[in-house]
Length: 232
Image (tube, rainbow, N blue to C red; front, side, top):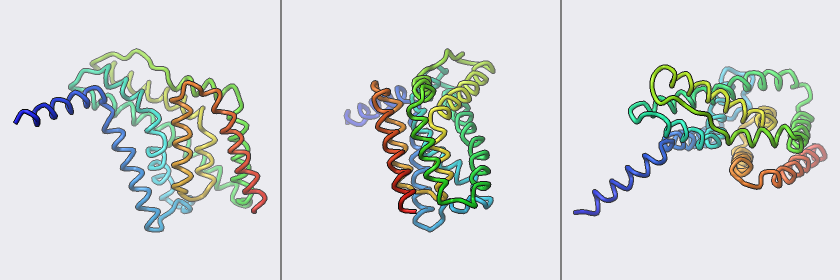
C-alpha cells in the first residue's frame, strides 16, 4: 500500500526537476508523425506545394527542439510553478519560429536552384563542411549553452521568455543553418539522415569536447559531398 504513493512522489519530484518533459514528448510526437508520413509515402519532395512549410515546421520541431531542452528547463525552473508551462510554451514557440522563418528563405532558395538539383546537395554539403571548420560555428555552439536571467512572474516574464526563445533560436540557427539548408535541398524527409544529423548536433552541443568534434563532422560532410557528386 505504501509503494504506490512513494512511486507517485518520486515521479512528481522527477517532473518538477525536469519541467521540460512535455517538450521532449512533443519532439517524439513530431518524429512519430514524420515516420507515419514517410510510411504513407507523403514525403517533403512536395516542397513547391503548400504542404512544404508545415512539413518543414514539423521537421524543425523534431530536429531542433531536443537541442534546446536544457534552455527550456532553465525557463521552467526560473518561473513560478503556476505559469511554468506558459513560460516554456512561449520560449519554445519563439525558438521554433526562428527556424520556420529560415525555412521560408531556404525553401525559396531551393526552388530557385531547381534547374541543377544534382549539384545542389553536394554543394550544400561542402558549405556545411566549411562551416564546421569556421570559428563562427564553434562560437555559436558554445553560445547555445548560455542562459539569461528571467523574471519569475508578470508580463516582463512573458516578454523575457519570448526574447530568450528568439535569442536561443538565433544562436542555434547560426550554428546549424547548413544542416537545415541541407534538409531543404535534399528534397524529401530522409528520416535516417535526419536522425543522424540530429544526434550529431546533440553531441556537438552537449559534449565538453566540442572543438574536437567539429573536424570529424567536416570530414563527414565533405566525404558525403564527394560520394554524391561522383555517383551523380
